[in-house]
Length: 322
Figure 1 (tube, rainbow, N blue to C red):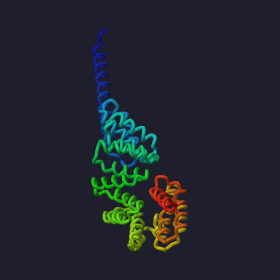
Figure 2: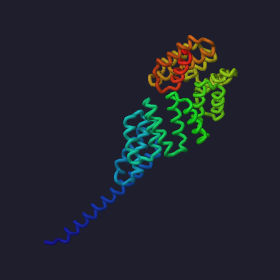
Figure 3: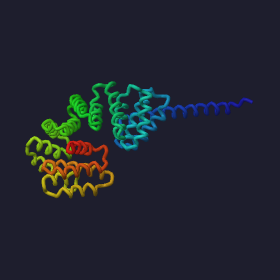
Figure 4: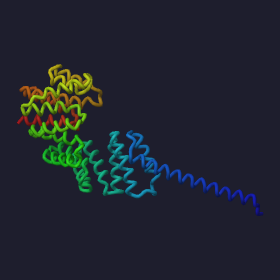
């Protein structure tokens, strides 16, 4: 029998359920949009970015365009790179490129993973694709220059660093890196000019004083005041203060090597490679070829494969053994 009360209750139930569904849908869409915006912008905390991007990817499935969804995968991939989780980073960046094969950003980020894994040729390919899609991509030119350097293709490295600098003249990093390539190639005057340019830009690079000194000495310029200035603002317990002290003859070189060996495990290999390389260059300047060879070999033995100093030590050793 028809009961108006029951009918009214059923109608009200349907309205309540529909309202809940609407609220939940709106809330889900708000969370999705809000998370997506934060994901793309980034919080600066990789683990938090991974969580937020993961939520945005799950909520946005089916509602976002392929390009927007790819952007979320790309952002989470960069966060994975920051945590050193390279396999997950590659998986996300591959997904981003399947969704949007025209993403120069995803290619650039995947190139960074390839470089970090020591796959320099693959890195060059990915950076090249990013540059094909966006020729004015300064960061991709800079990154490809670094990978070319690790492949010992010095001329191409110089070209890419030059393009990166012309596209973004406010970024001192490619200038500093180009200076290192010039130094490795024996173009000491150009190296000195690049390092001086970096100093004028106010780049807070703690090794700059060492590079300025080395390049200046190679072209018979005195640059001890550069080292003295660095020694005045570097804390005595701060790396690379022991190296600067050794260059100024304030402390024995062995103390710098010991300081590197006693560094935290996360930085020990890199600092050992750096200490032995810079002290090897100092030994060369002072005419001790035998000691330089010994130190360059020790730099290689540290196995800091992504250290520019180890790369430079290998090149110096090859020159000395010819």
